Image 1 (cartoon, one colour):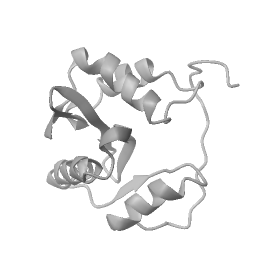
Image 2 (tube, rainbow, N blue to C red; image 1 turned 90 degrees about the horizontal axis):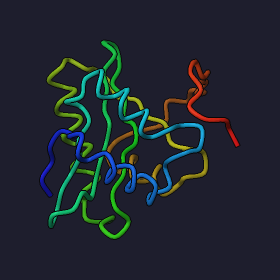
Image 3 (cartoon, one colour; image 1 turned 180 degrees about the vertical axis):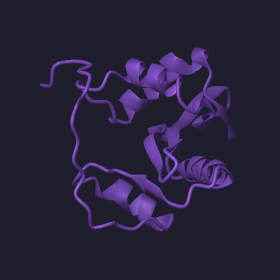
Image 4 (tube, helix red, strand yellow; image 1 turned 45 degrees about the horizontal axis):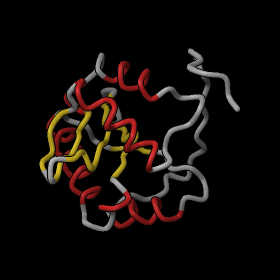
Length: 142
């Protein structure tokens, strides 16, 4: 797999990948999230190509205190090939080069398979409660 920064021509393929992986939600417009990411650290939005297809994607960010992983996805037909590990490793490398001391991420409750993936990469529960508040509505929640 070849990893590179996201390019605007990737948008439809990335949204299709996220949809196929079940990580989109009606209240988060993925096109708007992509547009937002492209205004802040676009170099931390990675895509992976293999055999002429986009097979992986992940958004990373650094707020000066903590790094974050968002929208990490690997095509279901390619899961188990260490592609997700490669995306995370590259994101960690980029964040480390920026001086990022720690990475946070959120996984939906009950998604044991993904929690297991991150645990295998050395990520552990922080024993925190994640709270959120929408400031801009993308779509009405279902």
